[in-house]
Length: 199
Image (cartoon, rainbow, N blue to C red; front, side):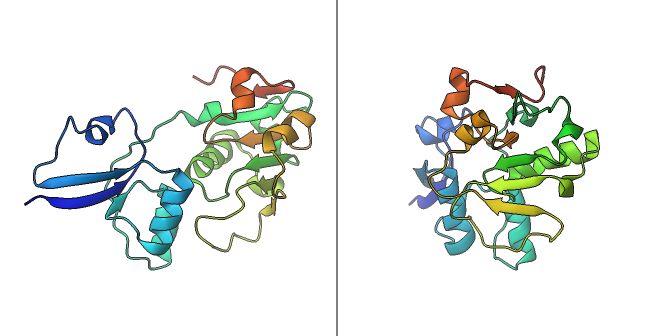
């Protein structure tokens, strides 16, 4: 008899054959749950709700330092070129990465893998001093409670306030995203990519 395995993971081009059943792992019946990422990560990191799940790499690394009983395998279903997910207000005076210093920059969560990658790129490839940026987060319920290093200035955007509108109005100078806001995909006023030729 096949073993039932509950997996919480996105329906990507690399996983779709498992989702639609055209590829069947020998000895397993998959219960594939395509849930929002924040829900997957919150439930797995705090309650271990699934047999297996996609998980944020940065959150996994943090969870290991906290002694959580999780095991990772090196499979990366979600991939993106992160230089393309940094947007700036065109009136902010930001022309190059170092111009972010002293500015207000929004992101979903400080420990998101995507934003960790981007901050690493900004710091190590472009010499941006991350502690000189005023960080604003908009995710209201963190996937995992943790203490951030004291050198970073991190504030939460109030509930109900839309970060894309803050960028358009210039109240945020830049944002680092994991996926595009619909307003950006349509062409928001006063918004452009930091790296126009990101490829």
